[in-house]
Length: 173
Image 1 (cartoon, rainbow, N blue to C red):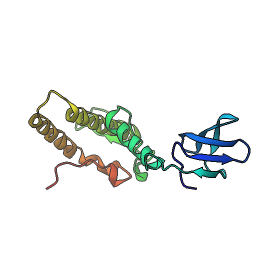
Image 2 (cartoon, helix red, strand yellow):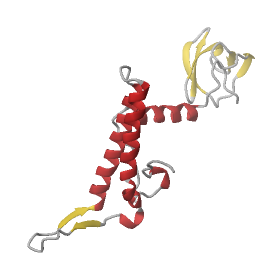
Image 3 (cartoon, helix red, strand yellow):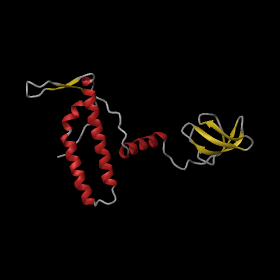
Image 4 (cartoon, one colour):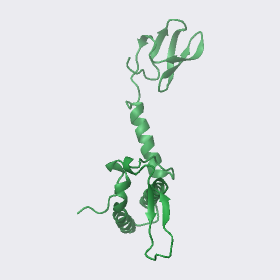
């Protein structure tokens, strides 16, 4: 069934005549003449008396994708990034040049999570710089170039990521 817009007039088999007053992901809120406001599943058979096109033709998955993008760019929330399978349950061993000192062992997933947090915080800083109202465009570009160089310095750690889309990228030649 096509999505009905707010204002569409329908007839429900049990509740009678009504008007769509709100649209949700899976249900309509419909104000029925004799039964008040009821929630009706979108997949339920309704007789359409007068169809009104939805005001916005955006799918819920598109809206969800947009919300995820906004949250990634403007919040301090860390996204879930996968560690490469070959590194799972692994240990990173830091061996000092001085033989009298002990090795330092760090679980790779702990180290990896710190790298991901660093990347996410760089992204937040990048967004805050771009949105800053007191920095000139020239200042923003200069700061952006430093951030790009930082990303470039971190490309060594790309070997830890499972997916290429999560890789650090520096300046492109």
